[in-house]
Length: 490
Figure 1 (cartoon, one colour):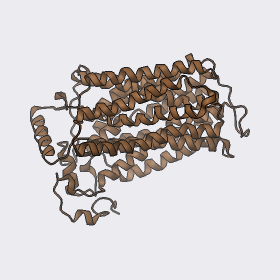
Figure 2 (spheres, helix red, strand yellow):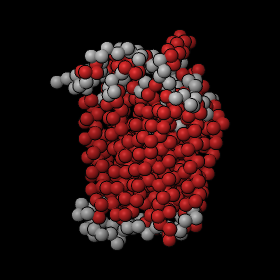
Figure 3 (cartoon, rainbow, N blue to C red):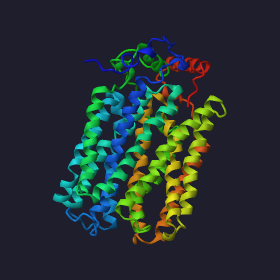
Figure 4 (cartoon, rainbow, N blue to C red):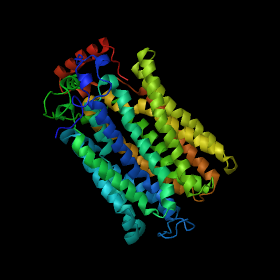
């Protein structure tokens, strides 16, 4: 039975006979949009699998739990911080291999393998805690990190094949907003699940089953590149391929990776540093907000989960607000691509920096203000999707997955160090002065990373993106054609 997407699903659009490069005559919804929707769902599941422990660990170690029918563990602050960081011990290892494998075998294969295996391991987490206590849970989370290390490099490889230049910022943001959607759903639902008759083990069962369902749908409907999709129209396929100079057949070209040129490229080094600063701040807040809510703001497990999810709900919604603003700015040509990237990156880093500094001086008596500042610190960070997050594809469409693998590998060393640093600094979890230092350090990473991006960040495609001068000339001609058609890169 043919897959009903593309020409079969939208016949009235495909009868228009639009020009391959005429973006204004393309259908409002095409195969590329459905592929990005599948990526959105996959990233939602991936982040649900990452953050499930952040809320579950509160219930797993709470002897005053509202559901005494399930095991409670005596894990101290350092032990909990180690468990919360364990995912990233494996995660950093497979970042660069993930970029290479997705480039060689296709993002469909690597995304399917990474998320499906991670989902199966999530189902085993309650058993691991029962049989091996924190030690076995640590090992399981490390292996889950190994599985998910391929996710972001594969996503960038996938988008470098499916997101046309004129829609790049928009589609990248749509896809990656799934990370916040998954975070919101998991954090919000986990508190209720943990305190219900299902107990905290069901936090892992629900997220694991969701991952299995997604993997089946992805295997059926996804394709690594337009030329491999069975029902895409010829016009849409030509439109996508022409913006990247992709081959018009099913052969996947393997280009030699210019490792030395990448490693000595100042725009890339800058991108790596700003990514590290972003990850320190993002994962400090993501892993530690539940503990901060419980121990400083005195919130119970239900309100803790809902309030912990609020900043990520705002972040998800603001992603679309920033897309809308960018579209307006680009249509009116107010900003160049470089200024646009740096403006949104500054909003996404420096506004949260100010909010975190202010949060350091808020006490438990001003809970609403603390929650508002946390929401600003996390929510406005969505602007970075239109900043450094898409810059990998700006610099090198051919090696975007590899670049993401390298920067995400380095950045997730920060994801390991951040929770461990919190465990060292916060020896008394109810002490607001210790949390103040945590917020100041996080703000410092935001300050340094974005400052360097403003000074040294670039948006031009780098010379090492091209394997030969012929492709470079072809790409330059195509860029000129896109410009005359008004398809400005966003």
